[in-house]
Picture (cartoon, one colour):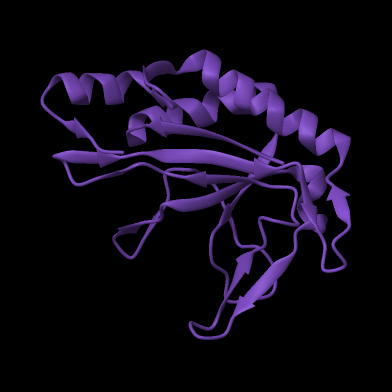
Length: 166
């Protein structure tokens, strides 16, 4: 079983959401790619590198860092967090080119099927933490349309002529 929240958030909204979630718990943020078989920790959801804003990040409880599974992507020679088996919340940031904004999302899996087709449930502590972050996010965001939420700055951006795509 998995859960997700779809949203429209500007970088201002994302920074505010990160601060709000940090009031509830301590967590690390992982880059979506690593050159090693270990997660690459970054210090903020507002992360860019070589002029490129990274849209894919992961949130993880400090106590779960050692439980993260990485998978190798040989065609592009990097390591990626295995979201299926790892106790992480996937954060895909909204994309905007200044005229349009595509939705982002928070996503996590509570359970998965292993190679032997047995159901594996992630820890109760992780699921409680992830669910608490989802509840806090939904409380803070405004409903934009069916299945989508938006931040205050994204709402202002839209009222100034920006277009939400889904």
